[in-house]
Image: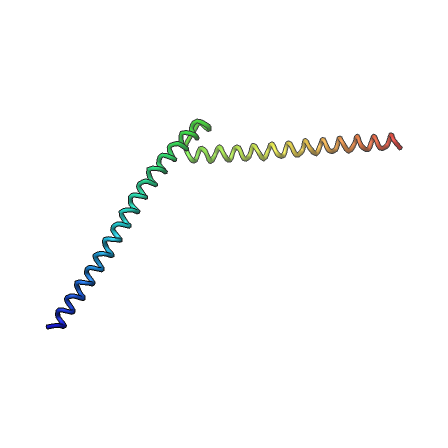
Length: 107
């Protein structure tokens, strides 16, 4: 009968260890759930703030409308940079012309 008692005790020990492991996993999962709920609340609040800010700054909080607005602004910036580059090139040419003229007068 001793082997039976030993097997039963081993089975009890295995069950106790498994139960302890399951309890620990449950606690970890519960903590993860609480953290996830807190994260969701925080992110929902942050999204609402960003949508309100976008609405105030750009007149919309729709992501597609904001993408289109961004594309327009990028095109406008590229155009302005091109115009400024051309302006600088013109100023440089005028300066070089003045320098040539001045060099011609001083010789």
